[in-house]
Amino acid sequence: MHEFSYHAPTSVNEAINLLATHGAKARLLCGGTDLIIQMRAGTQQPSCVIDAKRISDLRRLSLDPATGLFLGAAVPCVEIYQNEAVASRYPGLVDAAKLIGSVQIRDRASVGGNLANGSPAADSVPALIALGAVARIAGPDRERTVPVEKFVVAPGRTVLKADELLVGMQIPLPPANASSAYLRFTPRNEMDIAVVGVGVAVKMSGEGCLEAQIALGAVGPTQIVAKEAATYLAGKRLDEATLEHAGRLAAQAATPIDDTRGTAEFRRHIVSVLTRRALLATAARLRPNHSGN
Amino acid sequence: MAKTRIEATINGEPVEFLCEPRQSLLEVLRDVLNLTGTKEGCLTGDCGACSVILNGRLVCSCLVLGLEVAGATVETVEGLAAGTELVPLQQAFLQQAALQCGICTPGFLVAAKALLDSNPNPSETEIRYALAGNLCRCTGYDKIVRAVMDAAALMRQGQGRASSPMQGREA
Ligand SMILES: Cc1cc2nc3c(=O)[nH]c(=O)nc-3n(C[C@@H](O)[C@@H](O)[C@H](O)COP(=O)(O)OP(=O)(O)OC[C@H]3O[C@@H](n4cnc5c(N)ncnc54)[C@H](O)[C@@H]3O)c2cc1C
Ligand code: FES
Ligand code: FES
Image (tube, rainbow over all chains, first blue to last red; front, side, top):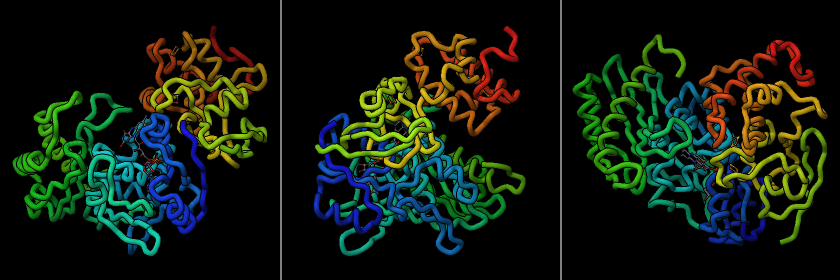
């Protein structure tokens, strides 16, 4: 690796000051599962690395009945799925957190880093979008918020300015009649990058869908919100014909490319299949006798 | 770049070392502390040969900076055996012939230890998922999985970590 200075600030302010001094040459470090690889490959050569893991705000995972979940940017995936209160209310987020890499990766990798890295295939991002997550960003003079669906602007690029950092994600508390799911397609079961990822959150009344959110990953330069499919589902029973049609609408929202991992046509097909399955999985989680996630 | 003095606990012992920001924990273990049991494979988090337990969690030491372990607890493969006495996991790997070239073995042992620390009775599927971050190019994995199942059984029979080889087993 190239030479750089290492800092481990203990407050957001201290980190902001470091960013002000080092500007675009500084990078935040959470689990390092993207950053250290990029530095070793030479694709990222920051002169200053700011370890975020000693900042308590960024390590905080807290559930509040009024405001919902605050997920600090540096909280590793393992702390999300091992937290039963979080797991029961945000199963879609937990689906994604459990899919990222291997045990070795999930014990270190954060959702904040997954988002800030800006990959279109990042597993946590469609789940966050479906759950209505908002990114909290700290800068030199103020904090601002950006909905997660607007956070990534291009592959590897986000709305963060050189002097800003991601504090964490605020996720509203889903009502009792709502649930969520994230499904992805990969050729292997573990340790693979999504060819397609679909996150859904649904509010139900009996077998009827009151409201839905659907977000797609790995089928465009950034994550895509499948608005038409979601709007179509509102007020419908989730029967086979409805699910089929919602899947088709979601597939139409996708803008995939052909690559070695799958053709655009294949990816669109998978979007429709996974959308249907994710909706079914979410509805199943809301049935009274449903156990576990 | 100036070196920083770092204090950490490695395999139960307090350790001090000097480290540059750009050195990974893997480099520190192997090149500075001479703990060469931890192996270097891919350097991209894919192979798990560099697995260690950091503050109770299984991580790839190639994806940790040496400076990050200030004040931390690190367990490496060297910390498994008590002197020359192998723990059940190590015995089971030998018994099942769960290694050929051996480069992946330290990583598998550490990953398996992390699994058995939290789940003393894993199913075969649980073992396969828990070890998915460790690659082996020689064995085909089945023998490794069987070794972990055997070790778990041995340990459940109350054989502690200091148990002597082969006790309580049929040959
Ligand atoms: C073997 C392997 C398998 C993987 N499998 C998957 C997978 O299946 N699915 C998947 O989605 N991902 C996968 N990944 C990538 C995944 O581990 C990362 O995207 C991870 O979630 C990033 O989090 P981190 O804490 O490691 O971030 P880091 O690597 O520390 O940081 C990532 C980027 O975000 C920036 N950053 C971090 N925190 C902040 C902050 N607070 N403010 C501003 N910028 C910040 C960093 O500067 C860096 O550019 C895999 C990685 C590996 C090595
Ligand atoms: S060397 Fe660290 S995972 Fe391969
Ligand atoms: S024994 Fe050779 S790689 Fe596993």
